[in-house]
Length: 333
Ligand SMILES: [Zn+2]
Image (cartoon, rainbow, N blue to C red; front, top):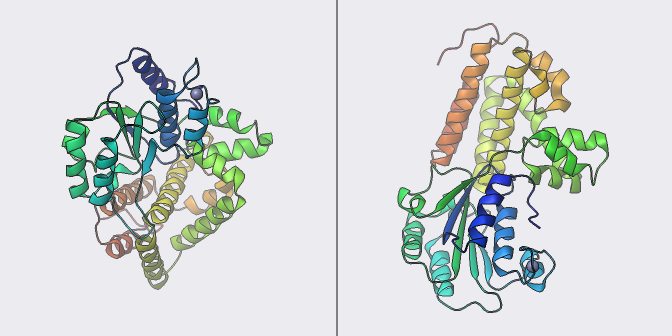
């Protein structure tokens, strides 16, 4: 049984390739955080090594050990610590060394490269050699939020499988197995189509609490003076240097709140993500024009791209804070 929720097209494609023995030697799974990329990659590694009839069975020793992260032939390569920003060349050298050795206990070796957009240029070029001449029986799966930051030469050697956000009702249905109807509905909406987030928030109440604190901070900035905005920018920037992942989460929250304000303005409340904030957003949106909101959403997206491209984070956040539109004034940038 494939455990990944939804993504029928991707699962169907992989299943057919597997059954017909024409699986590619390298895949790139592209999609937003928590959408199911890692679950799908683990499922594929299980399917390749499964001893059961219906692969992946999820129950044989191979499937179980892979699912528990204890299988020696299935390795996850990721940025080594929160302070590092790149997957380094040494990690890829290790992958290469390991890939030419025969599997220990499974039939196939599988290397999963998480956040492949963070491969250093050196590491990418080194990986390219393996992708050009893959050792037999080895599968490499790259995971990334977008293809943009990967070298074209890497892209051209991977089969790209795109994973889009899932429909909210599907996530709600899955959540209902473990949560009450109200909680399932709220978490499904807040997840923006990414089930991994919803299930994490169900397990760990701190996630929702932290989210609420972030939202309070964000909404305060809308009426804040220049000094507070600059100190917020400085704080975000220092968080960015400690953990890029966390800082991107905050930026995504900014984006989702402003998109919701646009939906409120356009009277399309049924599509709102942050349903627990509707009343306060309705008050906040008052006085902004649609153009102002659209303009600021564009600025948020640009900031996102600049940070991905390693621009100076302090500067990016300061410019962003200065660009928060003022009520009653036309949008000008
Ligand atoms: Zn199995």
